[in-house]
Image (tube, rainbow, N blue to C red):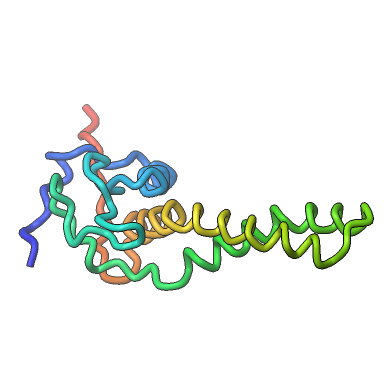
Length: 139
């Protein structure tokens, strides 16, 4: 079991949920931005070595794949329409588009999973605890 995470005063928390998403997209810990989020291609580390945030609690499940399919499908739909309306046969279109779609989906999976984990953490969804830096006292 990982030790308790460092307090928000000891690390640089992201300023907002978009910053947490961007850290996840880059494969960095959404909480501190200092360490790698993934130990393998789609397997997050159990705990961040820098801020000790427990990432074994994440429940991204299939949502990153759904997002990837949605994005890749919308990017390739106009290409498929243009290829078929340009006179290319359906089989040739399929032979070109299918490998391109698979590669695009594989390239988007890890950044999408990092973004989903960052979003879940920032909003305190699932087993995560929502945390924010306490604003300084106004004089």
